[in-house]
Length: 509
Image (cartoon, rainbow, N blue to C red; front, side, top):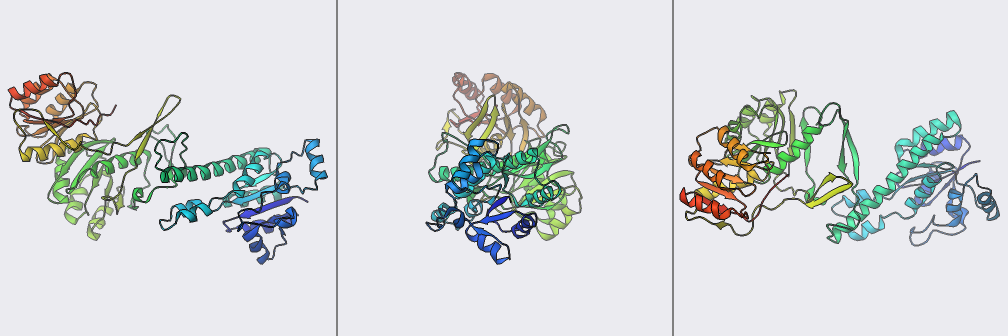
């Protein structure tokens, strides 16, 4: 008779599963609450203490950590010495381990949980049993997910045992379970200890959605969601309408949210291929979106719109006239939602806490042989700006420069933004020469540039000043820090252009 050791926190489905095992002639051993649950449901079950001849102690902290348990799991049935040892020590064979762990994940995601409660939800015996069974998967079936109960029973009924391949698959799931569990605990302690760059780092995510494809149709893709986020980083996100989000939708959505969060005034951001094609602020959200739309009426087609105010009827009417992939906002007036939802393919998202949501503190990038980890670019300016030219910007120009500086922060380098009246007139981005980005922006501007300002994500040289003077731009904001700064300042003074150095760049390669 084979023996299954059952010790589960999640009780869903376990009674039917164990009844199925007993019908197949399996002997059942169990622990603590699981033992009582099975007994209450009429199942003939042996208490683990009858195997170990040792009681549970320390309020259940120690109950399975015993040689008679781990010997029964770990011995190799094909090694004579192992078999002899088991017989000599009168250890019962354990041929299946079924375990779901203490709910550390649920507890950590409950904002009311205390540190002490979290500590008590760190499972010790469970991961140890799982790892032991998974290590000896050739002889021991290990089950760590309620979703596998039906499959395991079906295989046992039809074949009497699981194939070696299926045992190995379950072992892989088991190690994935314990790896994720330990990573979650490690990340929690790192967060508590304010360790941003630990000696060892492990990220843990759970499959949320298999996507139709990745960036291109020939690329497979999936979306994995974070298991643990600090409360300030949790977005209150609801999809109110439309098809499921694609790989590019999710990527562009994150960019659009990051951009619009940079602004306090009513602001609209239009994003295409993770690049802004129009950014504008206004007295209200309708004015802001109208200006963002007019900034580039062509590129916005099929784009993503992020708004930092509730969408009203007037704004919804304008939005509905354009083919858009996604609209995201903190809220929608009922009639505004009704107008937008008439469009079958538009995805309508609500992030209730969009304006208070804190973005993740760090970001990663894959490179050869590893991954880069850095602090997210979550600052805008140093404490003090440096006004380096004879002419200082007016109050109105300075306000416009700061708007443009916020916008250029999210443009791919080399990047520049030309703006006027808190509306991007032109965006030059992704060039290997900054002068080319400036030329592009000047040539593509939707309006005359006299009185406009320019923001540059990196420093530039004299040819850029010459170009901007010809176009009529009279105020510039840039990081400074080049050996050519003196030349730039002299030319700006010659043309009566106000130049502001930030001492901070937002350069992206």
